[in-house]
Image (cartoon, rainbow, N blue to C red):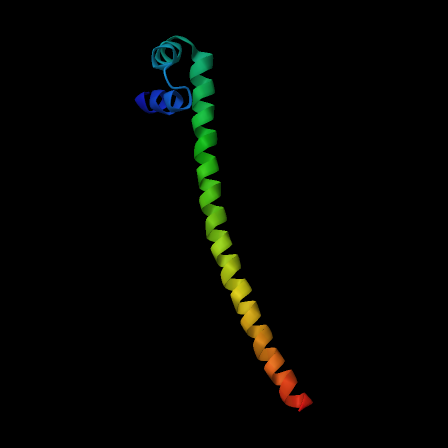
Length: 80
């Protein structure tokens, strides 16, 4: 529960008392905050996945350029 409070308070600073009251007394607000935390968590996961994929894409792009250079070397040898 404290984690939910801290997360939501960071978004809405200065509202800790109201947030804590609502979390303890309003099931809809609790569910809303839970959904928010799940959403935030998923966003972080997706960003990590994207970073991983971006690194992989960069590696493949580098490999592709290297292969293009090697192909060009062969082509140039035949043309001379």
